[in-house]
Amino acid sequence: MRKRMFLLLMSVIALGFAACGQEAADGDASSQPEEKEVFSAQVNTAVDEPGDDVADLTFMWWGSAVRGERTQAAFDLYSGNNPGVTIESESVEWPDYWEQLETREKSATLPDIVQIDYSFLERSVNNGMLVELTPYLADGTLDLSGVDPGLITAGSVNGRIYAVCGGVNVPSLMYNKTLTDELGIEIRDNMTLEEFYVLARDIYARTGVKTDLPHGMAYNFLPYTLRAQDITKLFNSDSLNVGSEAVFQEFFDIYEIGTSEGWIVGNDVHANLMDVSVEQSPMVYYTTPETQSWCGFFWSNQLTAMTKAAPENMEIGITTWPSSNPVKSDFLKPAQFFAVTTNAGENEAAAVRVVNYLLNSKPANEIMLGERGVPASSAVADAIAPLMDQNGQAIIGFINDVVAPNSSNISPSDPEAATQVYQYADELIHRILDGEMTAAEAAGELYEQGNRIMKGTT
Image (cartoon, rainbow, N blue to C red; front, side):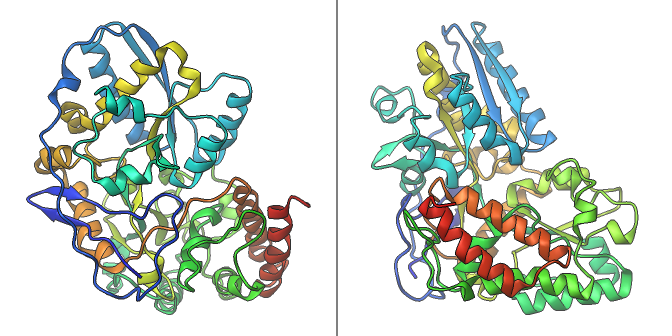
């Protein structure tokens, strides 16, 4: 399979992604990545000059408290330079984010600017939620001159730009390095599932500390495991794009094995957590070994928030998610996109200028410091690299040195009905954790019900 190269040269970040909605090319997933030219540009200083917009804007996002603090500080800086513009920031936890967007779309109360996840981009465009940004490139309101063409394409649907990459991200297993060091355990990057099982069993046997597998995150972890079987597109328009229920067995096996052997954090622990944020992860939020985990499945841009949430004297390590074929499973992803909604109305251009500011302003990104991922603008990434703290440097090194040389093209974004399929998979995981069904039974249920959901016959 043809791959992209993520290269840090003189702190300039350049990235390549498959086109949005395009299937990955066939070939050898273990081949060396294709070398790409580094795309560089001058930092756009015009975004920090005084403006004459008059607008009251709203921006809705998901994420940690660290993200909230840094985003608001960047917006305060913008409003200070643009006295006629106010930006009200609203945070919604990930599980509720898309439901709220859908509800607010129906009531015509969408915020002016939103974060959009790659997997929801195409359906958001098809639902008429997002403003096409292509015309704003032509008139200079939006400057993408420092953004790699692959990232621009990733924010496009049918050749038209609807979203701007807010940062680059990769799946990341974060772990209690203090604990593993004390046990004399070295965590290997690109570990297989079998190696992960050995770790989970060993740590549980020696300490009683459990392993937290993705909980309520089938939308991420299920496609990741299926990619190891060369299934890079899970959905057709009206069916699952798999030949049989057998392809789901490995995914559900992970939960059944963890349950039967006792090392997995169960439903009882998660029922007492308020949300799925890093601050509520059993790795950092626990009272006993039975409620504690040595690891958590997150994304690279969450390392700073996880480090901040960790108890004193706990060092957080970062590695790849386990897979039966790590090179096929792993990928580089736009962390999220910034987009303007059709509800912006007469404030549309003002909202686009704020998006341009988030993308191209050096002072703004000196505040945000890559919390949403490595900045998409190579010039901005170059400018802030010397200011990055230890976590920021660790993220850049992890993406550049560990993931990029051992990854494959990103999968196509999912159709709208996929959400229901993933939700059903999460329900089946709950039943496995409670001992109500086996992995084989869950695989059969997901295959049958998933196809009914896609056909609209449920």
